[in-house]
Length: 199
Ligand code: HEC
Ligand code: HEC
Ligand code: HEC
Ligand code: HEC
Ligand code: HEC
Image (tube, rainbow, N blue to C red; front, side, top):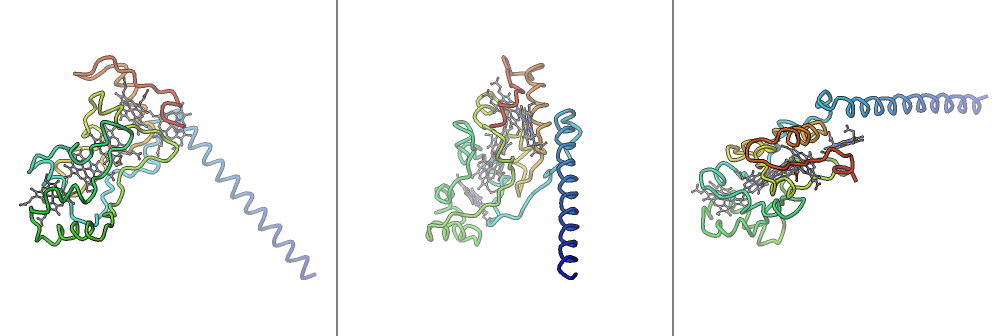
């Protein structure tokens, strides 16, 4: 009697799990369908706009890129040559900070990282899922400015995500730039084939 009730309970549990599974897969199907049909309507899914985490060192883009006019590509040299823009190593910081502000507590953290041969653990801000193929060089070499996708970084004391990086955002721009290239752009052919952005 006891045993069979246990079995009964387990069967009910299984049925509940199965129902939950069906509901979840339905939700995924519907959301995926909406996403493909009307990309502009689903930007709320996983929207990270405004994300601006505290970083291990108070690094200011305003101080570096604006007040001291250091070029973006001095530190993000990968952006023109491949998919990843890259975060500069602590050694790059020390090109200047072995002299500049070397007694500042924040700058001391850089020196300590180099001394201990430990990378600075910057918190990643912009991130698309692994099943998406994004390539900086295709955009940067065509002349799309960093700020078009990252906002006015040179005014930011702390970096912040300003665009939602959704599929609708990518596809919308690919269509727009191909149909009506903005001033200064010619022969744009930014494909909206699935395989352009998905492996
Ligand atoms: C002196 C070096 C330096 C310069 C110059 C610089 N950056 Fe950065 N950048 C960094 C560092 C270090 C980080 C990681 C820490 C942070 O997020 O603040 C970073 C982070 C970023 C991120 C966020 C990365 C992520 O995790 O999503 C973006 C976007 C970015 N930089 C764009 C730019 C742009 C655009 C410019 C020019 C206007 C620029 N940077 C100039 C050093 C630099
Ligand atoms: C090309 C030179 C250069 C490079 C490379 C550089 N910085 Fe700087 N940094 C400066 C200058 C100039 C200042 C402003 C100094 C001042 O206010 O007098 C500064 C200021 C700072 C400050 C503020 C210090 C304070 O207490 O006021 C921090 C923190 C800092 N930098 C971190 C970094 C980090 C982290 C990197 C590497 C990702 C880096 N810097 C790379 C030139 C540089
Ligand atoms: C067409 C839009 C676009 C342009 C233009 C663009 N980025 Fe990005 N950036 C992105 C996206 C999307 C991501 C997230 C990529 C990922 O998760 O693989 C990203 C990520 C980054 C990151 C963190 C990851 C990495 O690749 O290192 C940095 C740093 C960065 N961008 C800097 C820059 C700089 C500097 C420029 C200009 C030279 C630039 N970006 C131009 C869209 C863009
Ligand atoms: C501001 C407009 C804009 C945005 C936003 C944008 N792209 Fe692009 N994309 C372009 C342009 C322009 C090109 C270059 C087309 C050409 O070479 O004629 C391009 C090219 C590409 C390429 C290279 C295609 C090839 O044939 O080599 C890939 C991959 C790509 N984009 C992926 C993405 C992804 C993924 C996103 C979103 C995370 C995105 N793009 C967001 C404008 C944009
Ligand atoms: C220009 C780049 C681009 C093209 C073209 C593209 N996608 Fe996407 N796709 C993305 C990005 C970026 C995401 C991640 C969105 C996010 O994280 O919110 C995504 C996400 C998805 C997802 C996951 C569900 C979701 O909405 O997040 C599916 C499914 C998908 N794409 C299917 C497709 C299909 C099918 C096509 C062709 C009809 C296509 N994609 C064309 C960039 C693209």
